[in-house]
Length: 76
Image (cartoon, rainbow, N blue to C red):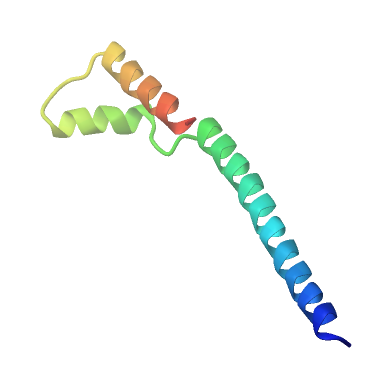
């Protein structure tokens, strides 16, 4: 086997690994974004509890505003 063939094989393997890593990262990113959108890690009850800890009674509008803000930022 010549040196050129060995170098070609090494670059081919490295190229395949890089392409595979990029494709895997892209797919994982899409799946995670979809899961976060469908199942947000914070609920309306948790937002109400947060307001209660601050000594405030939240209105429904405030709770919706925080949820919409979270959903908007989670989809970026």
